[in-house]
Image (cartoon, rainbow, N blue to C red; front, side, top):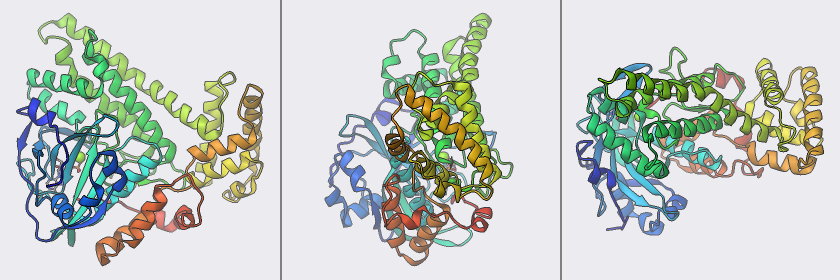
Length: 503
Ligand code: AMP
Ligand code: MG
């Protein structure tokens, strides 16, 4: 049996937080994807995994030595409504491994069959949505954005029934942890303060060990989670990523992107963009993401309050509420700071001495307003702005139907770049080079993702998936092979594009 070197703290230290369970056996396991780079990071033998033994393992037919598969309990607000019990209805945590960098990583299945948390679901997953999770995770990772990642996808050889019969698959996911806001909500909703404290202490030990000795460690945990979410959401916004289902069970304490089922990258810039077929009210629209993050953090804060003050001490409760509200109320400013920091890099502004938050925010907002007014492709506009930093405006100008307003903005931006350089900024050539390292040329364009998934799921043809994946792994390099993936879809295609969570 292939060695993983599991060390399972969750199973060991948190009895009562999960149900021990086994993956369902499947008829004919076949490996569709194996992430060799991630396998190496995890100190796994990628060559040995890339065969029948790996297929059996990643389909759930052979539980690797040392794994202790468990279905984790969690609750969650879904589209604003609270479900006191969700949990791993089609997922299992196999265990944890320590990677090459010494980080503890969860290895979990998705689509491995029914569990006691399955409710009416079948516990299964289809090839398309699982390969989609591969593509988006690898794309986010290559863009430098914290995310859970796929280690493998194995086809099961059995159909799963959605609107139609689809080929089934199991995804193996790697995550800093699967602790969610919803995990805390599960125990808070039951008034189980002992377990809540155990969970919070576990989260601190795992993600913020420096806080273990601070006197107000639960408040400090809230602050740490808020800081990570502010950075994460700012990074999403700066690449036009729309998660699609930011329920509290899909917000990770680690600050990684997780469970991005019906997600999509924006093409033409539109703050109201929403692609998910189940998001009728636009709750999780692009521009709502920072507001939802704050809302989710408030739900997280509520779960921590019983740990901060005893319910029968009114004054202590008031004090704790005031403390957590300070953190929640500070979130928009924290997010704005993270956003602006990313925008400055995207705009090629580097010198600290001339950085004026208000003026630079206005510069960025006016740029975005231009893109919005003329429905310009978000990714290409930023990328071609790097060309304009080099002195070549023509490619950028070609994106605008009406370039006069752009010219006025470019004059302002150039003036700001001149001041940057006068204060020690990098100069035109280096500015353009740096801008090309933060403004991707390639994102997972929706039509390309759909094309790859349709070929894989419908025709068992993985070539388009593999080509797209290769392109997504080098998002900042302009290569001939990448060129087809840099092109936006036709506006008509994007206008009616819908994503499905595939559950
Ligand atoms: P998600 O939309 O993937 O974040 O899942 C929300 C909840 O629904 C979680 O508790 C999942 O385990 C559960 N769930 C989603 N799909 C299925 C399925 N096919 N079978 C059982 N449970 C599911
Ligand atoms: Mg989820």
